[in-house]
Image 1: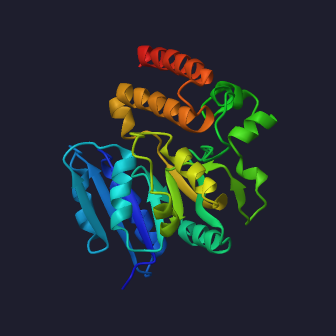
Image 2: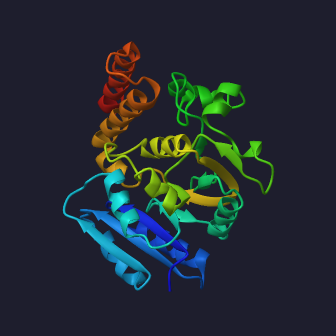
Length: 286
Protein backbone atom coordinates (compact mmCIF):
# COMPACT_ATOMS: atom_id res chain seq x y z
CA UNK A 1 0.00 0.00 0.00
CA UNK A 2 1.35 3.43 -0.93
CA UNK A 3 1.99 5.49 2.21
CA UNK A 4 0.23 8.80 2.70
CA UNK A 5 3.24 10.41 4.38
CA UNK A 6 6.97 9.80 4.15
CA UNK A 7 9.01 11.11 7.06
CA UNK A 8 12.56 12.08 6.09
CA UNK A 9 14.98 12.34 9.00
CA UNK A 10 18.68 13.14 8.74
CA UNK A 11 20.50 11.59 11.69
CA UNK A 12 23.90 12.44 13.10
CA UNK A 13 24.64 11.05 16.55
CA UNK A 14 21.15 11.87 17.85
CA UNK A 15 21.20 9.13 20.47
CA UNK A 16 17.87 8.27 22.07
CA UNK A 17 16.28 11.34 20.47
CA UNK A 18 15.88 9.48 17.17
CA UNK A 19 13.79 6.75 18.78
CA UNK A 20 11.51 9.35 20.39
CA UNK A 21 11.10 11.14 17.05
CA UNK A 22 10.05 7.96 15.27
CA UNK A 23 7.76 6.96 18.14
CA UNK A 24 5.99 10.33 17.96
CA UNK A 25 5.43 9.95 14.21
CA UNK A 26 4.09 6.40 14.58
CA UNK A 27 1.78 7.46 17.42
CA UNK A 28 0.45 10.49 15.55
CA UNK A 29 -0.24 8.65 12.30
CA UNK A 30 -1.78 5.63 14.00
CA UNK A 31 -3.18 3.01 11.62
CA UNK A 32 -2.77 5.06 8.44
CA UNK A 33 -0.04 3.88 6.01
CA UNK A 34 3.26 5.70 6.43
CA UNK A 35 6.97 5.28 5.97
CA UNK A 36 10.14 6.84 7.29
CA UNK A 37 13.46 7.19 5.52
CA UNK A 38 16.29 7.87 7.97
CA UNK A 39 19.51 9.00 6.34
CA UNK A 40 22.42 8.52 8.70
CA UNK A 41 25.48 10.74 8.27
CA UNK A 42 28.12 8.34 9.63
CA UNK A 43 26.92 8.36 13.25
CA UNK A 44 29.20 6.68 15.78
CA UNK A 45 26.83 6.49 18.75
CA UNK A 46 24.75 3.52 17.58
CA UNK A 47 21.65 5.65 17.07
CA UNK A 48 21.19 4.49 13.47
CA UNK A 49 20.32 0.98 14.67
CA UNK A 50 17.22 2.46 16.31
CA UNK A 51 15.60 2.52 12.87
CA UNK A 52 15.49 -1.28 12.79
CA UNK A 53 12.95 -1.21 15.63
CA UNK A 54 10.44 0.50 13.32
CA UNK A 55 10.57 -1.87 10.38
CA UNK A 56 8.76 -2.40 8.07
CA UNK A 57 7.70 1.25 8.20
CA UNK A 58 11.22 2.66 8.45
CA UNK A 59 14.21 2.29 6.15
CA UNK A 60 17.81 3.24 6.89
CA UNK A 61 20.22 4.78 4.39
CA UNK A 62 23.82 4.99 5.60
CA UNK A 63 26.40 7.47 4.37
CA UNK A 64 30.06 6.53 4.93
CA UNK A 65 30.78 10.14 5.89
CA UNK A 66 28.86 13.21 7.01
CA UNK A 67 27.65 14.75 3.75
CA UNK A 68 25.68 17.55 5.41
CA UNK A 69 21.97 18.09 5.90
CA UNK A 70 20.93 19.24 2.44
CA UNK A 71 22.51 16.39 0.52
CA UNK A 72 21.33 13.76 3.01
CA UNK A 73 17.78 15.15 3.01
CA UNK A 74 17.73 14.95 -0.78
CA UNK A 75 18.71 11.29 -0.55
CA UNK A 76 15.66 10.77 1.65
CA UNK A 77 13.43 12.73 -0.72
CA UNK A 78 14.59 10.60 -3.64
CA UNK A 79 13.49 7.47 -1.78
CA UNK A 80 10.14 8.89 -0.63
CA UNK A 81 7.03 7.26 -2.12
CA UNK A 82 4.28 9.35 -0.52
CA UNK A 83 2.73 12.53 -1.92
CA UNK A 84 3.46 14.33 1.36
CA UNK A 85 6.89 14.50 2.96
CA UNK A 86 7.46 15.24 6.64
CA UNK A 87 10.95 16.69 7.08
CA UNK A 88 11.90 16.47 10.73
CA UNK A 89 15.00 16.64 12.88
CA UNK A 90 15.78 13.61 15.03
CA UNK A 91 15.71 15.79 18.16
CA UNK A 92 12.13 16.84 17.40
CA UNK A 93 8.90 15.08 18.39
CA UNK A 94 5.32 15.63 17.32
CA UNK A 95 2.47 16.45 19.65
CA UNK A 96 -0.76 14.49 18.98
CA UNK A 97 -2.69 15.67 15.93
CA UNK A 98 0.21 17.58 14.39
CA UNK A 99 0.36 15.75 11.06
CA UNK A 100 -3.42 15.85 10.58
CA UNK A 101 -3.56 19.61 11.18
CA UNK A 102 -0.60 20.26 8.91
CA UNK A 103 -2.06 18.10 6.14
CA UNK A 104 -5.45 19.82 6.52
CA UNK A 105 -3.84 23.24 6.03
CA UNK A 106 -1.82 22.00 3.06
CA UNK A 107 -4.79 20.36 1.38
CA UNK A 108 -6.96 23.41 2.02
CA UNK A 109 -4.55 25.71 0.19
CA UNK A 110 -3.73 24.26 -3.26
CA UNK A 111 -1.08 26.90 -3.99
CA UNK A 112 0.75 26.07 -0.77
CA UNK A 113 3.81 23.81 -1.05
CA UNK A 114 4.97 23.61 2.54
CA UNK A 115 3.57 24.12 6.04
CA UNK A 116 5.12 24.12 9.47
CA UNK A 117 3.90 23.82 13.07
CA UNK A 118 4.46 25.91 16.14
CA UNK A 119 7.71 24.60 17.62
CA UNK A 120 8.36 24.68 21.34
CA UNK A 121 11.45 23.99 23.37
CA UNK A 122 11.10 21.27 26.06
CA UNK A 123 10.17 23.94 28.59
CA UNK A 124 7.23 25.17 26.51
CA UNK A 125 8.72 28.38 25.09
CA UNK A 126 8.07 29.14 21.42
CA UNK A 127 11.20 28.83 19.32
CA UNK A 128 10.09 31.20 16.59
CA UNK A 129 9.77 28.72 13.75
CA UNK A 130 8.01 31.07 11.29
CA UNK A 131 10.07 33.98 10.05
CA UNK A 132 10.43 36.81 7.57
CA UNK A 133 13.08 36.82 4.88
CA UNK A 134 16.46 37.69 6.43
CA UNK A 135 17.75 41.25 5.95
CA UNK A 136 20.41 43.47 7.50
CA UNK A 137 18.33 43.80 10.71
CA UNK A 138 17.96 40.06 11.22
CA UNK A 139 21.23 39.95 13.14
CA UNK A 140 19.71 42.40 15.63
CA UNK A 141 16.14 41.09 15.74
CA UNK A 142 16.47 37.43 14.71
CA UNK A 143 15.40 34.41 16.73
CA UNK A 144 18.35 34.39 19.14
CA UNK A 145 19.07 38.13 19.14
CA UNK A 146 19.02 40.02 22.45
CA UNK A 147 17.08 42.98 21.04
CA UNK A 148 14.21 40.73 19.96
CA UNK A 149 14.02 39.23 23.45
CA UNK A 150 14.03 42.72 24.99
CA UNK A 151 11.50 44.23 22.57
CA UNK A 152 9.44 41.33 21.17
CA UNK A 153 6.46 43.53 20.31
CA UNK A 154 8.33 45.81 17.91
CA UNK A 155 7.25 45.53 14.29
CA UNK A 156 10.78 44.70 13.17
CA UNK A 157 10.95 41.90 15.74
CA UNK A 158 7.59 40.41 14.71
CA UNK A 159 8.59 40.65 11.04
CA UNK A 160 11.71 38.60 11.66
CA UNK A 161 10.13 36.07 14.04
CA UNK A 162 6.36 35.69 13.76
CA UNK A 163 4.63 34.86 17.06
CA UNK A 164 1.77 32.38 16.98
CA UNK A 165 -0.44 34.99 18.65
CA UNK A 166 -0.68 36.80 15.29
CA UNK A 167 -2.48 33.81 13.75
CA UNK A 168 -6.24 33.48 14.44
CA UNK A 169 -7.05 30.30 16.35
CA UNK A 170 -7.35 27.28 14.08
CA UNK A 171 -6.09 29.12 11.00
CA UNK A 172 -2.80 29.35 9.11
CA UNK A 173 -0.77 32.32 7.93
CA UNK A 174 1.39 32.84 4.82
CA UNK A 175 5.01 33.46 5.87
CA UNK A 176 8.36 33.78 4.15
CA UNK A 177 10.02 30.70 5.60
CA UNK A 178 9.79 27.99 8.22
CA UNK A 179 12.23 26.14 10.44
CA UNK A 180 13.46 22.91 8.86
CA UNK A 181 13.24 21.22 12.26
CA UNK A 182 9.71 20.19 11.27
CA UNK A 183 7.80 20.86 8.06
CA UNK A 184 5.29 19.04 5.87
CA UNK A 185 5.61 19.51 2.12
CA UNK A 186 4.20 18.35 -1.19
CA UNK A 187 6.74 15.94 -2.66
CA UNK A 188 6.10 17.12 -6.23
CA UNK A 189 6.76 20.76 -5.28
CA UNK A 190 10.06 19.82 -3.63
CA UNK A 191 11.11 17.90 -6.72
CA UNK A 192 10.08 20.81 -8.95
CA UNK A 193 12.70 23.07 -7.31
CA UNK A 194 15.33 20.33 -6.99
CA UNK A 195 14.95 19.78 -3.27
CA UNK A 196 17.47 21.33 -0.90
CA UNK A 197 20.47 23.25 -2.22
CA UNK A 198 23.34 20.93 -1.35
CA UNK A 199 25.82 23.80 -1.08
CA UNK A 200 24.39 24.36 2.42
CA UNK A 201 26.16 21.85 4.63
CA UNK A 202 24.19 22.86 7.72
CA UNK A 203 21.81 25.74 8.56
CA UNK A 204 19.90 28.18 6.33
CA UNK A 205 18.91 25.49 3.82
CA UNK A 206 15.31 25.82 5.04
CA UNK A 207 15.21 29.56 4.33
CA UNK A 208 16.69 28.95 0.89
CA UNK A 209 14.22 26.15 0.10
CA UNK A 210 11.19 28.20 1.11
CA UNK A 211 12.41 31.18 -0.91
CA UNK A 212 12.89 29.08 -4.04
CA UNK A 213 9.45 27.52 -3.60
CA UNK A 214 7.93 30.99 -3.42
CA UNK A 215 9.88 32.07 -6.49
CA UNK A 216 8.39 29.06 -8.29
CA UNK A 217 4.87 30.32 -7.55
CA UNK A 218 4.07 28.40 -4.38
CA UNK A 219 3.50 29.79 -0.92
CA UNK A 220 4.49 28.81 2.60
CA UNK A 221 2.16 28.71 5.61
CA UNK A 222 2.54 28.65 9.38
CA UNK A 223 0.08 26.38 11.24
CA UNK A 224 0.39 27.02 14.99
CA UNK A 225 -2.52 24.71 15.84
CA UNK A 226 -0.04 21.91 15.09
CA UNK A 227 2.76 21.56 17.63
CA UNK A 228 6.18 19.96 17.77
CA UNK A 229 8.75 19.99 20.56
CA UNK A 230 12.38 20.51 19.57
CA UNK A 231 15.46 20.00 21.70
CA UNK A 232 17.66 22.47 19.83
CA UNK A 233 21.18 21.50 18.84
CA UNK A 234 21.41 18.02 20.34
CA UNK A 235 23.77 16.85 17.61
CA UNK A 236 25.53 20.14 16.84
CA UNK A 237 26.34 20.73 20.52
CA UNK A 238 28.84 17.88 20.28
CA UNK A 239 30.71 19.65 17.48
CA UNK A 240 30.08 23.25 18.49
CA UNK A 241 32.96 24.98 16.69
CA UNK A 242 32.37 23.30 13.28
CA UNK A 243 28.64 24.01 13.69
CA UNK A 244 29.30 27.71 14.33
CA UNK A 245 31.52 27.91 11.27
CA UNK A 246 28.92 26.12 9.15
CA UNK A 247 26.18 28.49 10.38
CA UNK A 248 28.09 31.60 9.32
CA UNK A 249 29.24 30.10 6.01
CA UNK A 250 25.64 29.21 5.17
CA UNK A 251 24.41 32.64 6.27
CA UNK A 252 26.82 34.27 3.82
CA UNK A 253 25.84 31.86 1.05
CA UNK A 254 22.17 32.72 1.57
CA UNK A 255 22.89 36.46 1.63
CA UNK A 256 25.08 36.32 -1.48
CA UNK A 257 22.52 34.22 -3.35
CA UNK A 258 19.27 35.97 -2.47
CA UNK A 259 19.99 39.41 -1.00
CA UNK A 260 23.17 40.60 -2.74
CA UNK A 261 23.48 38.65 -6.01
CA UNK A 262 26.38 39.44 -8.29
CA UNK A 263 30.06 38.87 -7.53
CA UNK A 264 30.82 42.61 -7.58
CA UNK A 265 28.00 43.61 -5.21
CA UNK A 266 29.61 45.76 -2.48
CA UNK A 267 27.09 44.56 0.08
CA UNK A 268 28.80 41.18 0.00
CA UNK A 269 32.04 42.59 1.42
CA UNK A 270 30.22 44.12 4.38
CA UNK A 271 28.23 40.95 5.01
CA UNK A 272 31.34 38.76 4.83
CA UNK A 273 33.23 41.03 7.25
CA UNK A 274 30.38 41.18 9.77
CA UNK A 275 29.74 37.45 9.65
CA UNK A 276 33.45 36.65 9.95
CA UNK A 277 33.75 38.91 13.00
CA UNK A 278 30.67 37.38 14.62
CA UNK A 279 31.90 33.87 13.94
CA UNK A 280 35.35 34.63 15.38
CA UNK A 281 33.80 36.09 18.53
CA UNK A 282 31.50 33.11 19.11
CA UNK A 283 34.19 30.54 18.35
CA UNK A 284 36.56 32.26 20.77
CA UNK A 285 33.98 31.80 23.52
CA UNK A 286 33.04 28.21 22.64
